[in-house]
Image 1 (cartoon, rainbow, N blue to C red):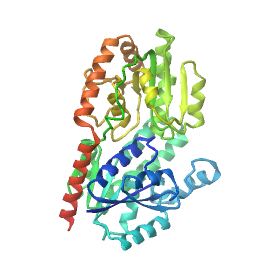
Image 2: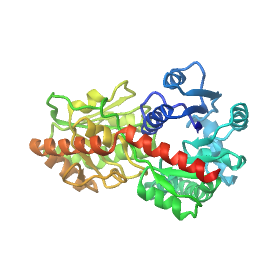
Image 3: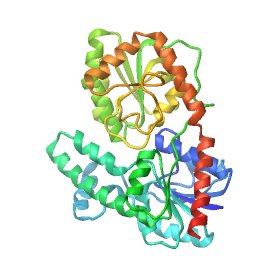
Image 4: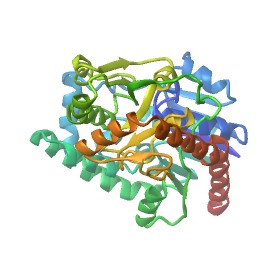
Length: 400
C-alpha cells in the first residue's frame, strides 16, 4: 500500500508529544507500507535525514512565516476576524503546499493520504479524488473551549470565543471530506462519529518506547517534582502557571525544600519569569528529558486544558515514576486512580496529594510499578501501529 502523510512539519526532533506520536507510528508504518511524507521544511535538515533513515520518502515545501510575535502576527490575528476559517487553519494554508500535494500525487499516485493533523484537512476539500484518513490528535474544539473557560482577560476571552466557534464549525465539516478518521481516545472517536461521518472511526491510542524510557536503580531526590512538555503549547503554559502560582505555595508551606523542574522547549517570557520563584527551575529546550525525570520523586501533570491523551504520562510511567495528574491531564488513558496513577483536581487538593505522595516512598514505588506494567501491556508503539495499519487497509477496501 502506498501511503502519503501530510503534516505541518517533519516530526523531528522528538521533543513534543505530537512529534513523538507521528514519528513513532509513521516509522512503524514504513516497515509495513511504502510511505512518503509531505510537510513544510527544508530538504537539508536533520528532520528529513531522520525520516529518510527510516525508509520514508520526504517531500518539502518552504514553510510560511508563523512567528507568534510582532506587528505582522497581530495583524494576521485581526485579519482572521473576517475569515470563515479558524486561525489554526488559515495560518497553515498556502497555495504552494496545495500545488505540491497535487504534483506529488500526480508523479506517484498514492492509495491513501493520511492527514496528520485535522487543520490540514483543508487540503482535502478541493481534492475529493484522493482517498484519505484524518488523524485527530485532539478534538480541537474541546481545547479551544477550555481556553475560553480558563481565560480571565476579557479581550482575549472574546477573541478566543470567536476562534472556538470557528474551530467547532470547521471540525464538524472537515471529517466529511475524508474516507476515514482515527482518534487518540474512545471519547474523541465518539465526538467525530457524532458529526455524522459515513465511516467507522477507529481509536489508535498514544504509546511509548518502553525500551528507551526505562526505570533506573538510582534513588530520586525526595523533594523533587518534575513536569515535562512543550512550553510553546498553551495548555502546558496554563498548567505550569497554575501549579507555580496556585499549587506550589501550599506545598512549600509544609515542605520548604520542595522544588519543581519544568522541562520543555520554547518557554515564553511569562514562563521564564516563573524561574525567579524559589524552588522553581525552567530549563528550556533540552536534548534528553530522561535525566530530569529520573531525578524526581513525583511526576506532576497539572493540566486544566487538553485533548487526546498525554504521552508525557506514558513516558513517566515507563521510567517507573509515580504520576500525579488532574482528571483532564489523564483523560483518554486507561488508568486507575490510586493504583497506577494519583488524580487530584483543584489547587488545594493537588497540593495535598503532592505532599502525601512525597511523604510516602513505599506508595511511590507501588504506583510506579503498576504504571510501568500498564504501559508494557497496552501502550507500546508496535501494537498500535498494527491497529493503524489495519484501519488503513479497511478504509482503502471500503472506499474502492
